[in-house]
Amino acid sequence: MTTMNLSALNAYLPKNALVHKKIDDFWKVKKIAEAALEFESQFLSLMIENMFTGFEADGMFGGGHSETIYRTFMADEYAKSIAESGGVGIADSVREQLLEIQEMEDTISGGVNA
Image 1 (cartoon, helix red, strand yellow):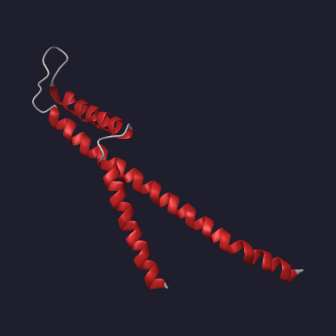
Image 2: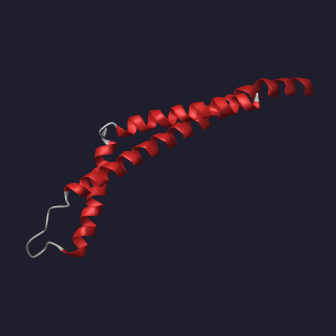
Image 3: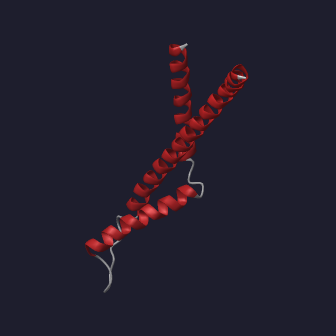
């Protein structure tokens, strides 16, 4: 009876290890996608902030240090919204490059450990 339990356990372990590898791979890809999206968002935020550089607020409620801070936050939110709705393609390119680098690192580390 003990032998059957061990063989059943041995049959289960490779599948379990494969599941763990797939889960790890999923989280790596998810983190890479999030990093690429954040990169595009930061890039777009800088572009949007530069678009507002020449504008001066007039009137009773405009201008000052508070408006500068508000414009920065507004540019960040615009950039996040643009990036999350498909962006301009920067995140896609960055994600592909990071995944290629990850695959090369996995290949190299797999070759060293083999």
